[in-house]
Amino acid sequence: MKHIIKVLLLSICLTIGCNKDDAFPDVYINESIYVTGPEYIGVYNNLWGYQMEPGGVGGLIIVQGMNSEFIVYDQACTFEASQECLISGENNNNDIILACKNCCNSKFVINDGSVIEGPANRALKRYNSYFDGTILHITN
Image (cartoon, rainbow, N blue to C red; front, side, top):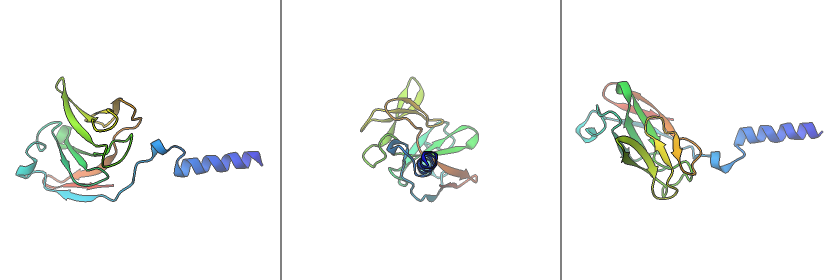
């Protein structure tokens, strides 16, 4: 009987999560953005250039990566996912670092969203993106 209870508790934890810190709000994203337009000159064809846009939990961070790949993160910090704890950019020795300056001072690497400093213990929320040569499609 104890074994059955342990298995049941473990399956519940794996299904819904045991730790609040591991939860990030799941919001619907289905955006199409004309990133080759003049309003995106700081992002398009600008390696590691980025721009903030509305969407997601706290906003979207659109990043131009390698080989015309675009990376899209949620602007809400993963330590406390809210509209008050937002990620912004900072230039740190020519390496772009994204940081939560409003709440916890966590810092994230722009190219993969991983945590490099602070209390956040998970990478930035990343959305699916597809660039067709003109339009950037963002979904989850």
